[in-house]
Each structure stands twice: as C-alpha cells, then as structure tokens.
View 1 (cartoon, rainbow, N blue to C red):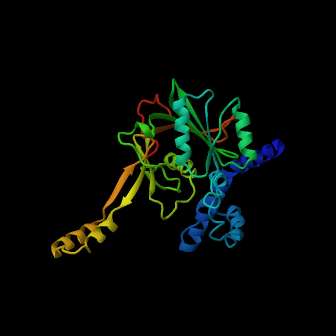
View 2 (view 1 turned 90 degrees about the horizontal axis):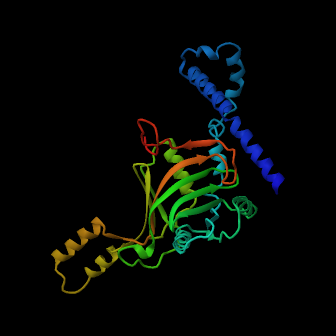
View 3 (view 1 turned 90 degrees about the vertical axis):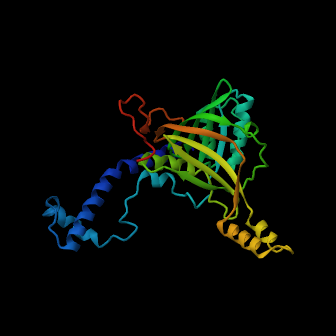
Length: 314
C-alpha cells in the first residue's frame, strides 16, 4: 500500500509539473486557429517552423481535448459520480463540548462517520482513511474547551484546507429549542465566493456533500462576509398547502378567497434554524495531505500587508 501511494503521488506531481507547458501549448494553438479562421495576420511568434509544427494538430482537436485540465480536475474527478465518504475526528483528549460539536457535524454531512482519536497520530489516520477509500478527513481542534480550528484534508492527494473556527453555537445554545435534525442530503447555498481562492474554498466545502435530495426541505448556507464564512443550517416549511385548504371551508367570502389566493401566489415559506452555527476563516491551502511536511502552499493569508484586500471575492 505504501509503494502504491508513493507511485500515485509521483504521477500526480508529474501531471501537475506539466500543466504550465500544456497551458502554453493550448494558448498557442488557440491563437493560431483564431488567426486562420478570421483571416488576420499570424502572430510573429507562430510564424515559420513553430507554426508549421502546430498546423497538423489543429484538426485533431475536439471539444474535450481543446480544454486544458489541471490538478484540480484530478482531485475532484469523481465528484458527482460517487458519493463522498467523510471521516470526522478530534484532537487528542477532547472536551465534552468538542465531542458534542463533532457529533452535530456528523449529522450535518451525509454519509459521514465519526471516529475517536485515541492514540492515533495524523500519519496513521490518513493511511487508515486511504485504505478504506475515504474521500475527505476532517479534524477539529480546540482551545480551552472551545473549538477553534478545522482541517479539511481531501484524499488521496490533497488539497488540505486550514480554517480558523469561531462563534460556535451548538443546538442547545440556540434561543429556541430546535426540532430533530433531518439527515437527508441538503441543498447548499454559497454566497459571495467569486475570486479564484473563493472558488477553490467553495469547492473544498461543496464536495464534502453528495448531490442534494430534490424533495429535501433542508438547506445549509455558507455566506462570505469580509473573508469570514458564516454557516447556518435551516429547514423550511411550505405553508401554501394549508392556505389552499383553508379557502375551501364553507362560509368563506369571495374576498377572503381572493386574498388567500394572492398570498398563495406570493409564496409563504417559513425558515426554521436547527443549528449548529459557526464561522470559518480560511488561512492556508496546501497541495498535499495533512501528514505531509514539505508540500507546496497554494495560498496562505498574509495578515501584515499594508493594504489587505478581500481574498474570497473579487
């Protein structure tokens, strides 16, 4: 298993190293094809022998081969084809509040499983997940009984996304006692993720979930405000059926019926928060798994710049 993992890692790194060369070649083909189709002058760097080498390959391309692929496509190649398999665990010696938070996270993510950390080191955890075809490993850390960090590690090759965790409110911390939590695949709402890093973070979170159940009355929202991702979990109730049934009662006037029909057309949906709620702040994305030490950092927050700007939005 170790040899196979090393071989697959080397193949992944080789494909990633050849990305830039493939991107430059695809760009040159695109510019040459546009010049030939529009009748414009061929760019100077594509004249002579360089252009003659590219001409025979233009007719061999189709819709699929004309698009360049990246290591991101390899990481989530089976997203939407196979349901993700997620494992949740904690840091060592977890407090009761951290254990309760991880239990509620397991209910948030369908097809996830919680395991006790025990004496496992990170290397053993990652190898255990790889051997059982786990797609994502989530590790929750705490400080003085409060969950304060989350690591989302995609397997088998990465990436590993690191988040600060704050404002954690468990279900029993909500002002009103929530109803029982449904475990149907939820609808997902991602708001204000427009930059390259924002789309990357959105993919890391989105591919933890299977495709949504069309009839599920459950929605989870990830809202980006100032590079902080606020998470909320709701269920909704459709009251329009009750309104249409009330209009058929005897003795109701035509004006009441018209008013009820207009309210039905407007649509009356009731949102109920079922918890938990928390806030995520990403600070690093590594092109590797959680146990790797010398890995390339794809992005990291730089808090000491003179003019900080939003990273998750453009």
